[in-house]
Amino acid sequence: MRRQGALGWLVHDMSHRGVTAWVTSVALVAFYLILYFGGTFDQQGRLDAWARSLFGWLPDSYEPTRWTLYGALYSIAMVGGGAFMLWKYRHNRYQVVRTLVVMAIQVSFGFSVPILLKVFGQPEYYFSYFWPLKFEYFYPSTIVSQPLPFVVYSFVGSLLLVPVMTLLYGKRWYCSWVCGCGGLANTFGEPWRHLSQKSHSAWRFEKYSIHLTLLLALMVTAAWHLGHLSETQARAACNLPELWGARPEAACLDQLPTSTFAGWYYRSAFHPLMEFARQYYGIIVLSVLSGVVGTGLYPLGGTRLWCRYFCPMAALLGLIQKLGRFRIRVKRDMCISCGMCTEYCEMGIDVRAYAQANRSFTRASCVGCGMCAEVCPRGVLRLENVSRRDAAELSMSSFLDESWKG
Image (cartoon, rainbow, N blue to C red; front, side, top):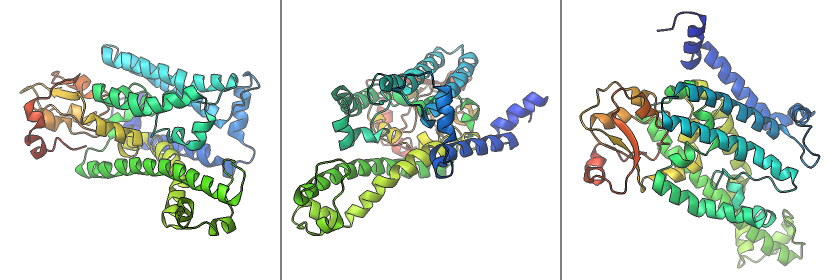
């Protein structure tokens, strides 16, 4: 039922796919389309001009762009939504601390620190993002151009910190406490978290789409390294200067023997496939799926569309999480099947099914937001890290009741 009064109607309409929700979604999608692709028809660069007018007080060593303006708006949305979260869940210490941490990381590492680095003559760098989410940090050109401490941090963070932390604490340490995408979903997107699809078909799509995106991220990273290796060989064979991006001419490539890696690479069917992935991955995945779809459709499809279906980082963390210590513990014989846990799961997990079966579980898609435990009226659910799993969790019964999904 709709609440009485104009404000109550607006709240219900906005959070339950009403007219205002559709209008909001259209506005968000339009904003992201202009942000990512507006340069094709906005020759005057209005967004860049607004950014320069708003951040003109910064030193001349930093030139504000539309991305500066976007970062500011993003941070404002997270702080505003975070204030609402802090008030709404002020009784829950886990939610309060988690919200404060993710807000602080966005304002500092997600917005202020990259600007300060450029102000002091250093390259822009985001310490809160790792490969494969920030896949360009593994590019050969990035490795040779970034300061050594940044390169070391990228590799140690991506290859050591990320898997170790996920094994110990589950993917929640990143997806719900650090990542700006998850932070926006759990602050600004809070009114729409219950809209996530809970159907079996949605889970099947999720299973294939998110791992396909991870595979594409691996392909793109490999494409850049293979391309760099082949270009280096071709430049040497054609006596070209060793400049980044100085692609050899076609006439030079035709002279390369197929016995060399460069000759094989440029003549194989593998080359155009890798070039396509390298050229369009950023546009399709990071622009359209992350921004236009992932955030623009909050009011219609829920807040974790990007995280659930397409984020390569979430896919990688989910695979590691299945091997780690994190789980959601279910207290036996206490579930009353109210369904609140399932309704408010932003990742579309049917938590009630596990609670009804008295089975603690670990799902690769779970981001550990803790909202299922918060809304449960009987305290049936608990987020925890365990060094040993119950025998039932590791037995064949887990396959029979499909708790391995995700």
